[in-house]
Length: 166
Length: 424
Image (cartoon, rainbow over all chains, first blue to last red; front, side):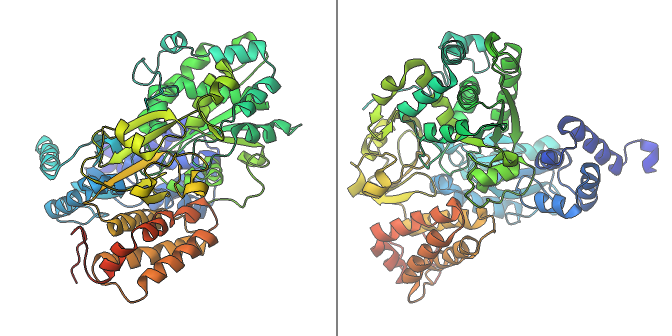
């Protein structure tokens, strides 16, 4: 289908998302961190074109926008999978079995942390302490918490996500 | 020793977003008392007299910090709430923000009244989405009810609060990095002095206070400095929220008067799972101590007096099955990852330390590695630009001191607890 015919080409989707974010946070350069985080959450990641568009709207040099985008872990600058799994690997989660979870995840999905599966389904990311240490070990999938995990429980959770997609 | 819930007294018991429920348990009574019956100077004097010290980890006297900003004249001033809680093992601020958000808003308004500030910012870490949502609602409702905005409680006092979410960076808990991030930049620490109290947010005199610190303010204003000083110990008054994790029966948050010992905290958390080996006190940037420190009180002065840091109040408890080298390795992995890259001692030093620890846990240690850990650890501690780097090797250096023989065993290719991979 011709992109124009559908009325929602990829670039239009991205343009509309930027529009919404600007409406919410304004165009003051001070809002740059929030604009980029919010846009990244909506689009999955920010391409170079996205960063250039933000720079234009905020009247900032591209270097400044790129510098901020690559500094913060919640702003993605390369494509991510349908689901993103964040795993805490700090001491409380590590002691509670986090290292076993990490190995099990890499084995099951056939990728290392920091990578995305070839089918585009899963991205694995490590994350610094999420402040749920009383439920260690914890992971977050698409913004949702899972605590007191064992390898078996995590396997079951992943299977559920995959079933839902069919 | 029993729990004494002052800061957490409403958390988990009331609907956190209900202003009625908050008001039903002293909510906004302190702000009402302050703006209707006290001068700003009297509020400031009360906080100074209470001896309240910053709960973010450094323990700086809150009243003194406020007095620097109060003394500035002819300029706008700003209150910033540091809600960038990211210290591994710490979740006290999240509990307050999610369970009692109005307490933080009231504390900020009181700070604004005391120092003469009309604008306040909450900088909350990006990962705390739920807490941010609740704060947003709480701020809206506080405005609607006249606890924020112009003419608060029908007085001349005006105070606004804005919410700013971060985007994932531990360094932004450092106050000057936080201010950079708040201004929409990379979170890179600034040169101090000037301190934020002189030139902070956009160069304005700025109070930066931790969430737990601000939650202490309303009870102090309402019940007085004397009442507050009766809690805790002489130089560290009040209560402290500790967050326990690791090998205790019931990991979680415990609020007790300052001066509690590690042994008492472990008992309050239901006791040990297994036999005690060591604990890291104060978060990932804190000290690793052995059983000889179990009965030493935890205060803002205990690092200097007993080599036991209070820090953020995070306590990670380890039993005899845990490996100290593995723990030091995980801690250094964190700092190596979170170093902002501005200064060489931290950027390169944490990486070198991480590499040595990685060698040790794989049984590939080299002659002189333990000495190198100590030497590089001191370089990073003494040479780093900001508190992140300065505190990064604390756990490693204290562990090396208390558990030298375990590091030596790894150098000889043996992990005594059989935790490390040791592939040879």
